[in-house]
Length: 330
Length: 251
Image (cartoon, rainbow over all chains, first blue to last red; front, side):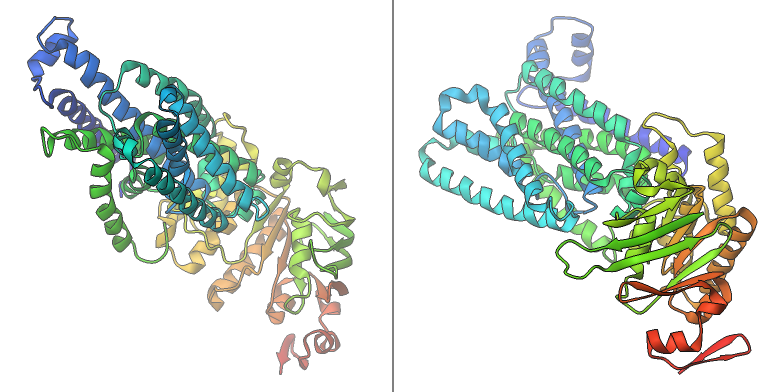
């Protein structure tokens, strides 16, 4: 673990470079290769042969992958901290499933209304979360009850999802791609939308970031420091749900980012949220943009959904984390 | 000065109140011990005094103000609590945890002041943790970890400090060290200390005042030497006790 500020700056520099490399790889590779000199020329405003591909396809795509990475990693970190549970993740708690169910419902039953997919996905995620909160409200939103309720809700929604996909198996094509996390064919409009939706959440997190360290203590300790535990927990987990749902609405299900990125960040810089928060954001962006490049190039010309890549690499990594940590600590 | 007047608390759904008509006084600069058998209601009494529970009847007075009228933040500026055997394993350093004790004095955007830094350094010094300030909490021994939570509570600069069975899980060396620290703080800084203890000899040795709780009621209270008699110990704990040169022999 990195402790002093000098090492931290160095680590931030390394991750920043990694992000740059990842972005360059992402915009450069694909069915058309765009080399560095050409990228430089396009950025200077020259009309090169691949300029349109670069500005209208590659750039929005990599931007969206960065935003998705940031949002999902942030959502995971917030949930893990306020619920004090290493397994808290929008995926495991059924929030993503709720969002996906809402979206699937629209895509299969009212295909004409695809414009409403993001909104309905968000409502679905929120509904799943409110259901969980409703079940655990009387237990003071205790982490264990919250997670168990989340697992149960997740199971029920997945069941509903199966019913939908079985009944409408003839219309599944677009849905399956989307469900697996899809970053292809994204526009600047979608990027802008995700950013505009995200900004209020970022500001809220920034405002409350100092309380995150306090919230990692147990409830009695938090209360004896004069903080309204339940209100903070509800507020910050709502922000997390919001971030996850608006992201799922745009890019579908990309699992494991919310789970593993905060864990890697914790291994690197420790549990102080003053460092953990920015490093989680940075790592989230690196991981998803890298994952997407990999998804596009690993079996080219066929493109894998980025969610599939994250699952394949994320699952084993999570197991590695579990084995590496002794005892029951996060 | 803290007093609880005729406190009655019944847990939701319970038939019998866990605490009935309990009246206690915690004078400043003194250590007050709460004793009693398991399930007697002493933890409920402690939670009423810390403001964690609000008694259905009776009032807790803190410096002549009713405790329930104090907003949580202001309460936390006056009362600090050290929990029983904290199971938290935060991935923070000792100093990072102790700094959290300054939370009640901060608004969302206020910056860290020299007064904050001074309070943290003093809390670290008082608990002998200055040299361990940059150590990771998880790397500490159980005794050191318990001292971290005491330091966090002290960083709150409270008028009243409550401790719920602070010596549990500590070996005898750390138990005595902790109690000596508390005695010193109460004597030198006028800190009001209230704590739950199980070892009656430690009560005899360190507590200026003692309240004995049995079946939700206070059956004895006052100066420790007058409260902790062989007769009381026989009645409450069903243990024979003999006072031999200032120490209780229990059998």
